Length: 619
Picture 1 (cartoon, rainbow, N blue to C red):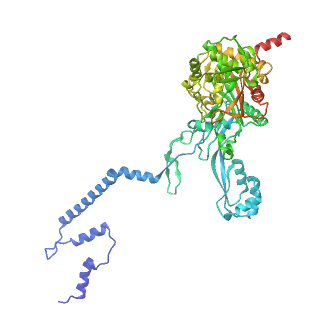
Picture 2 (tube, one colour; picture 1 turned 90 degrees about the horizontal axis):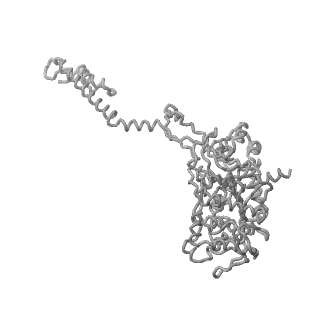
Picture 3 (tube, one colour; picture 1 turned 90 degrees about the vertical axis):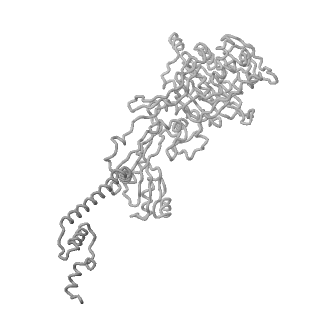
């Protein structure tokens, strides 16, 4: 039977297959589902079944709720921590704020090293609103360049040209005030050394990565670097950092500074005098050291030639090693007072002993002579030091057993380090016991300061034992961490001083050294009104290949003052000075005198009491 159009239309309306497809939704699905099961299929009259529909809907809802609960359990419990971490990673960013290195100051709080803001200046010629010539003319005075140079630079590229990499803040302000389009200033921090080359040998420098490469910038980096914690900050949708998760005070840092024992005033005097004398005698290099023997504080330590740490890239890399702690030399006659102290302390000699000096002495196959082939006949110990008699020193040491003498040399520290806080220190050289005892020439040459090696700083340390009552102290430049109010928060733990000589022995030797200045080779270091002990040294320069370099010498002078109450050691050394008149007395002694003349008012050293009494008696 053919279906009528009306019946076909009615059936099509009830048939979902013929209906227009609707967008899927839970509500639409339920409506269609209920419509599909609205009547029972086994009755012709299609009577509704409400209970069936109720249970069906309840089952669907319970199933959906159970699925939702399982999904929530998975998200909140099983995957909760992982998803939370992913969210935090997306919303948070870890940063380590930049914190400047601590200041370095001298003992009077004069700044020696500081972090300062500098700027990199970029030019983008394509954005210039003025001509390249006009831009160059306005920038040239600030950048210390000619307009022609800047125009040529502008024409090299159309963007991203570096005009200056370390532009000072003042100059950056001048650039900003021009209000020129096409210029970009990027701020950064750079280490600056206001004293320039005056304290370079002590302070050193940092490289572009802000890592210390020399001096205390290298050896004390842990004290100079402030501790900075890495923090997490939340980030907004546009990438901006929000402070709501920042710990309180995370950008605050302490005001501690690293204070040194160096006195910049004395350091500057020492450097200028040293430079003048080194140039005068055309020496290879030279150094000056001033130490307070009461505790080992170094008040001055300078060498020449040196470098400007602000422009370290232009310097010879060999200058970055402070040769007063990194190079060895044979001290020569400046070691003689120490040998006298050893012999006195051991009881091998007495202060008033007299020796015969014929001018030469035979030791095995070797002949030892005095400088200048002089012979002094019968001389006492003070005269031996005054004339720097090699023969007299050999006679003194011959009174000691070689093994006892060798043990004293080791006790004094030969062949060891001084454990200073300056970097790159090397160990002194002393021949092994078997070699030393195997030939009498070893003790003989050691008696007048040859055949072994020390650093200049180690010689100063040893003379410090004569200046402080016999104790071997540790030379150092770091005083500690202090705040802006001068309160000390950290001080280095220095080794306990070792008693080497008795106070009586030390004072006896210092008084003998006084005669060297008043009557002997150290007279150029004499200062009216002050009792000063000293000893000159002019030694052959050892060759790296063994033996000595012909014609090469090292001249030096060491002084101790004041004699009546010894405390300060002043030392100067010049490496390979030129000229027939180049000796410790002519090259080094005048340097020491000039430094002592600056030290006396700085430290407030009064004139000697004996001299004061004599002048008052005459009045």
